[in-house]
Image (cartoon, rainbow, N blue to C red):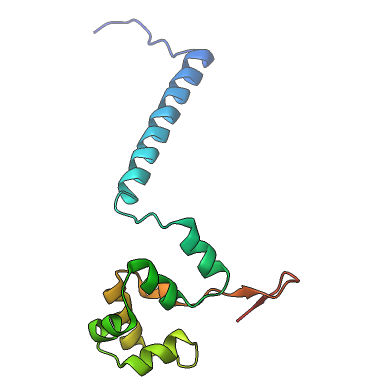
Length: 126
């Protein structure tokens, strides 16, 4: 064994090592974010604008997917009149129906929940 004392790095060397580790951490965080969002769908701004304007999400997604009302009703196992009532906002479907519609449109069920609307003075209304 050597009787040589170990020399600890100076403040400058430690700062450089910390900076290098932070850079590596940032790179790993970026890679993880890219992996997590790799299969996310990019939705055109016109779809977001329609949702923000208060259009019923079921109508917006159905039209964006290019599915007519009767085909969606058939795919989700609901009647045409029920679907019309949902799109018109006069009937809130049970969870089972909402999930079936979401599956048929390839969206999450919460994507079919209408967005809260701003009444002009900054307060939201339903």
